[in-house]
Length: 448
Image (cartoon, rainbow, N blue to C red; front, top):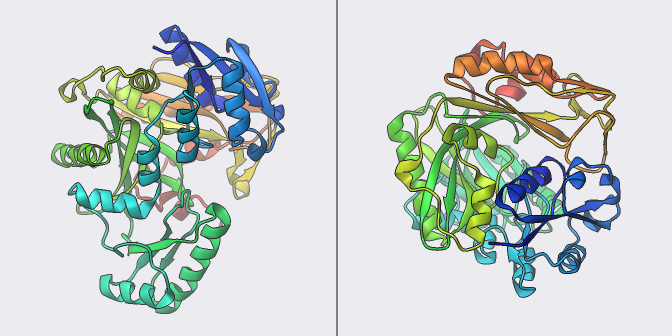
């Protein structure tokens, strides 16, 4: 097992990893930018090192600074968390060349999974259903038109290196395809320095359902059930739950087995998520693999009674999986609410600032994962998430009831948050009935 792990991240995930290290008796090194000098996780780390000024390009994305910090602190492993460098195959390679263990998949697996075209080929090789579309990148406008005519409108133009809805356009006819093709390429080039796009059939009103997998370096792979991530705003997840309200056991098993096949085909190890679209007829289609721990991993931890961060560390150290597939059972229902420093009543305007009063919710079935405290100043430089409220109760109905109470208890004076939006969502009859899709938030709760 490792002696000392450097946590190459910030905020709640840095604190979450630090706690797992303490549970395992491993020393931790916390890095931070100048804007994060007052972050909570720094109080509990065994060593702290400043790696640069506020901009993430100069700190949390600064590979030489992070490697130097690891070498100075004599860390034998680095956990990247999510975001920042977590899916950067070059960073994983640099760690490897410096004899520092990267707590995540191999550089090769990260590269293959991160390229959506390559990942789709892997899925086909593994016999996993994929959305009908182009066989690979679409290099010009004419090829895009021919592909769309073949699979039928509407179609979705997607950046091969994309994420978070960037480099993505829906086209309902040929003129909108031409416009969308060029704008998607332009946006992808600016966001990812890669203008490659591909085309697939646009599935109307789908659910976004993902399978959590965990694999060791000895060929063992298990899936830990699904998460329904359909509540999104502009392709950014807001609320996740497990199990999916409409998934039957046969479909759940088929999706889980498909995810495991894909992981084995990719020679994947560590934590990962295989994402699918689920249509109204319960057909599922592979869309991408996330080669990291997800923001929403606590949902899975609650319903399976596991610790995914701890398991990632064990796997990176060469140990075998703690469980077999038959050990994984889904118990009860869990939901995660991403509490972002945004004003949902004013087009989700960012709301950084100092938290004047803070009261965390509590009670049976309530988990609060966060790095904030009273007097903490939310910086404007990074992602707006300030905490995750996770509720776990025996039934979905009870989970909703406790979530309402917990959201009302949560006090964050000084900033606006998405908590008020969730209270409205929990009162919506369609949500309570489980009748949601990826357009639910934009349809009912976005400013007109």
